[in-house]
Image 1 (cartoon, helix red, strand yellow):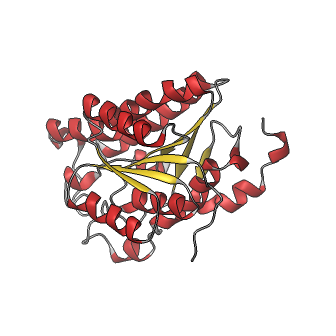
Image 2 (cartoon, rainbow, N blue to C red):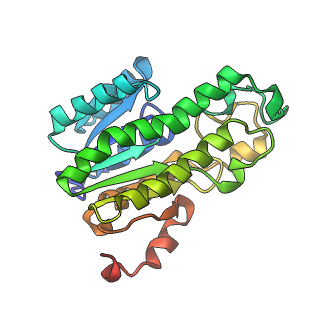
Image 3 (cartoon, rainbow, N blue to C red):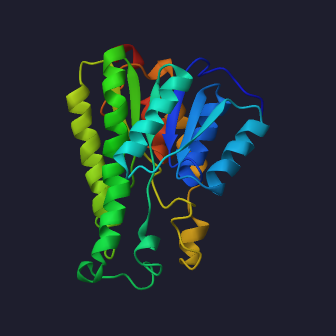
Length: 263
C-alpha cells in the first residue's frame, strides 16, 4: 500500500509507540503522510520500531521518554518542538497492564488488599500521571497557537471495574476522567480532546500468553485504532470535541455525525 497525503504537513506525537496500539497508531498516521514522533522508554524496542518505519521511507522521529518523569517528559516535548516546529496531534497512549502486578491475573485475580503498593504506584504513575504530564507539557503550546488535537487512549468501562483489576482499572478510569476535565478546560481554545478505545480485548503485550484461548482468538487487532485516530488528526474532524469513540464502532459513529454542524 502506497503512502497517501491525507495528513501531509501535519505533525503528531504518540506515546507508548514501541509496540501494540501505540505502534499501530503511529504507523497509521505515518502512512497517511504525517510526521510522527514515536515516543517510548529508551531501549531496543523503540530503536527497532523506528528503524522499521524509516526503512519504509516514513517521516519518523524516535524520542526516548519515561512518562513517569516530569523532567524527561518536558525534555522530550522540547525535542519534538525543536524538530517539528509545532505539534498538531498528541496521542496519549503509554501504559502498563496487569501483568506487571499479577502475571496470572486472568486465572488467579488478586483482591485489592493483596496488591503490592509499589506496583500500584507504578501503574498509576504510568497510566494516569503519565497522561497528565505529557498533556500538560503540550497543551499550553497548543493553546498559544490556537489549535491542536489531543487523543486519549482508553478502554471499556467494564474493564475499569473488573474483579482483580486493581490498579489497572482505576488508572484507566482516572485517565478517562482526566480527559473529560481537560476537554472542559480547553473548550473554546481551538484545542480539542477526545477519547478513543478499541472496544474489546486487544492483541497486545498486555494479554498474557496463558490467557484463555477463546479470549485470545477473539482479540481485536491493534490496527483497529488507526482509522479513528487518523480521522481525528485530519482537517475533517475540526471542532469535534469531548467525544468517546469506540474504534470497533467507528464507521457507525462517523456516519451518525453531521459534520456540517460541527464548529
